Length: 85
Image (cartoon, rainbow, N blue to C red; front, top):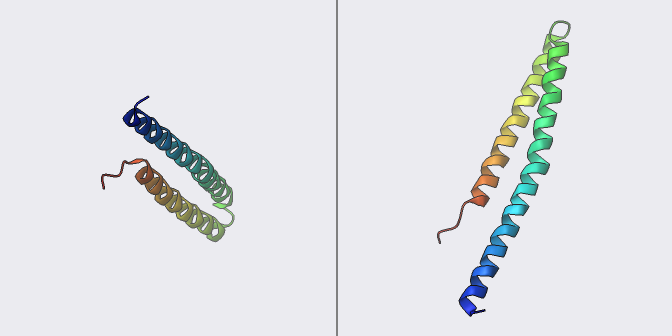
């Protein structure tokens, strides 16, 4: 195999490893964040009529978790984009 073909194979393998790492990161952190948001939404729904202040607190926490998940998504997607430097 020529040196250029070897370099291409190594670059492809490195890209694949990086994409796998990003996919794992997205799976681990994003899904956990979304699951936490769902629990908070459910809790807020259950508290809405009897404890509106607690329901509002739960919704605010879910919104914060959603923002964290969005930020992590943006970072993960940025990691998937090729560098042109």
